[in-house]
Image (cartoon, rainbow, N blue to C red; front, side, top):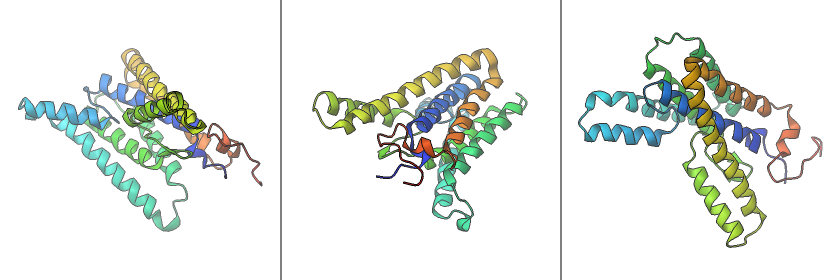
Length: 236
């Protein structure tokens, strides 16, 4: 089996999911209690406002949901029709756009409305999540943790209880790493936003930049790292 693309390796996935946890904590703590990535949370909070007939408070939760859907749509279109072949790597392009937007946020005045920041992050995060969907043969989500937690639980049971093959062990280890990364990122993001405020956005931006470096085409050795396949020479 050939080595996977570098964006399908565990180190890249771990960096992405840790940054996602940071961003959710960043927007929730610093931008009106709204999530940038966890649309399930935003939907629940929106429905609670509807149930309380607090219609004036709906828009801050509705806007990032619509922005996230728009980001998914744009990313999917560009993956299927990559600008007539001019977009060589949609995954790297979408990740670079997310990094660029976070850097822009870092330089924006704090007087910018919260909704603009959160909806912008939701849009670029959705594009990134649409491009980064697998670690080797395992499907995962790079911006939320519910599905990853389920994969960890089933892999752990298959490995320890049902004694299935080593793929189950790999699945458990991989998804435990992702869940731990998201939790750690959320904790770090909450603490950083509390103490540094607006400047905390540099932390997820740095992690995403590291992931982008690992995804560059010259980084051949990363293609076989932490994917369960033996590393191969570039010309093999």
